[in-house]
Length: 105
Image 1 (cartoon, rainbow, N blue to C red):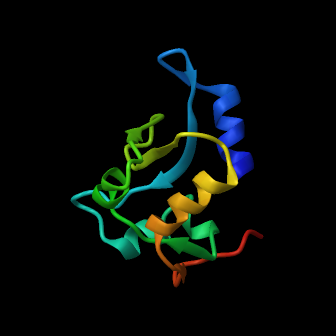
Image 2 (spheres, rainbow, N blue to C red; image 1 turned 90 degrees about the vertical axis):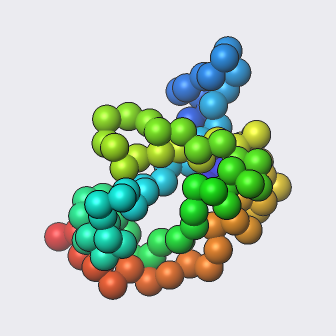
């Protein structure tokens, strides 16, 4: 996750500063969690974290809609550091098995 945030910071900026982001996929109003887990790209992930945008924001992590997929968001970290990733993971909650997982062939 540190590498992913660092890569984001090298590629993207916000207000002239590196944007250290972690990609997340959101359940939208008309979605069910099972539908989301069965759809690309989530079906390719054997596990996932479940959290709310409200919990992330309350912990000080801005959540930004990004790219063309309306379900794709980035959680903005203050830095690409182990401490910041640990702080974020505390909000992410426990890792869960994806019952809709389909291994790549």
